[in-house]
Length: 183
Image (tube, rainbow, N blue to C red):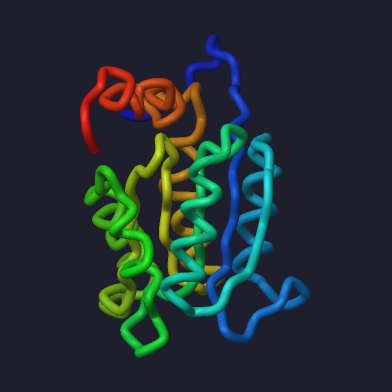
């Protein structure tokens, strides 16, 4: 069973939050606010936050730029995971993934199903790794952001979480590149 090992130190990581929306501003971005509050309460560092429109090129460029920064370990996006014509976040970001995290989507949907039932199938939440940076693509509702953080990310982004967590493998995410391998 998972647990927190209090003998290990808490290691704060750098996180960027991107809201994808044609209509939201910082003043009314409840989903972004939800993530920021949880990131800071957990003791991590919010490095930057932005809002971009539902545009594949803008989304991909912003996230790609953040994955190249040394101070950002994780990018969390909110919005654009549905099925309407403007929902393009997975299409924008999955091509950046060097490794896809299928389990993230599966666990997210399991948690979401307990809250909203079959409506969870209307989300294309996903996750992956690009440029040694974890990327998590969440739906645009505050409830979905709470579910993803509280049910998955809070534990996996805590070095003390056992039996394993994302923080302890961060130094090895780009070892294939350091060994001269290809993506």
